[in-house]
Image (cartoon, rainbow, N blue to C red):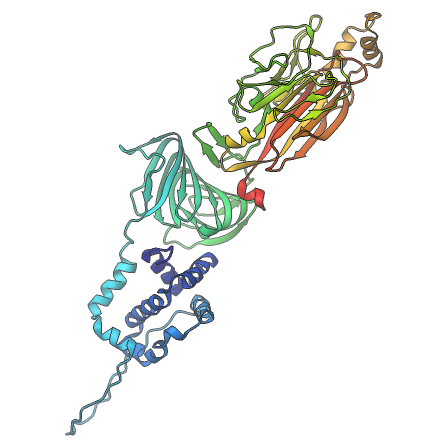
Length: 576
């Protein structure tokens, strides 16, 4: 029967009769009517069987002639029929009339000619016991277990079962509760609904469109095909209307619901108890209390739940941006990188710490970075006679001429140390960077680095990159250093003397996408940080960051990109 099993069709038709059909169920029925050539005949047979039990065979036979020509009804009729059934009041049983008492009369019996209608013939062929059994099997007896979902990925998952679920394992409905005691698992239902569960959690699928959550954390991303997917907890039920939502079911019985995108209906109340309903929209969140099922509005916690995982790259995504600083430090963008790890512009090698405090004069040339899959290469801008190559694809940019003098390397962190400058953390707008809360990339002038966006996309399956966001500026600690050395003479270095006279240093920030300039900004240590937000399309392959000395010198150019992030969205969101 098309893409729906017989149990699924029966479930939808019983919802229709009970006036519990939602819009997504109505869409499924309409699709079934259009794609299954046997749907109209099955619908009539189902309604006939149901009517015989509820109205009686005589009442059904009385109107049976109307159903005899079902093959002649067009699609418009069936759409109207479903809509009428959805909105119609419940039918009342027609009582059988008792025959009037009368005196016995002798009559002459004559052979009777009875018209046999299609529906009455079917009723005659089926005994009452068979009909009752038919309806009991379809409705009163729980549906037979059927496969409804697949395990698609696991990250350090541990199960209470002796047979742990692995990627590719099929999960059936109506099974005993499944307990995830460790790690994270990602499921995909047969209606294309992504479900991510975090341990500890207990769950079970009731049908292809419903999962019960005894306790734990669940995130669901519902496709158009899966509209109507629902999550049931001990004191609530959340019915999807096209959403991304999360459910936290605490062991103490409280339930929290986070609506990240779209809409959903919340029904608060324990099983077999009175319930209240509430429509949740994007950005809303609420808590259903265990004792009285009261609903309380709460703040939406954007990173409260894991929304996606990748065991291949150890990705755990909670909706947060991907940290470029973490990538530079050898991580996956989600906290795996090492502090002060980075890339040496002189040779493209990865390094873990600052080993040389001196400034070095470097040569032209693009250096591929082979030890970090997300970094395409590095370069020294502004010293090539015919321009500077900035990508492995051969893109060339003509920077203003620079001295080619470089201190240190490009690394995950925010720190400077020199021959006469003690080691210290860098600051922008009063914020100390290089911490877990404020990550950064130290980017002394005359250095450039290119990220391979294609390789990054491969590490985040199911997601894509929307934009690059960062703060760009020169550390405020430059002013502190100049103040400490105030009065010092730099007659042999007039450019450095110019910095002391001004009381600040200047650099130029550059950003390119596939070799095309998208930002060029001059900033000084006295200016504060500049907010950067660069849109990125799915066609962009290379993102290049560079810092060059301004018209003064490379000295005291303690530049950094603060909170450098790639903003991520699901691929469905990117299409909207």
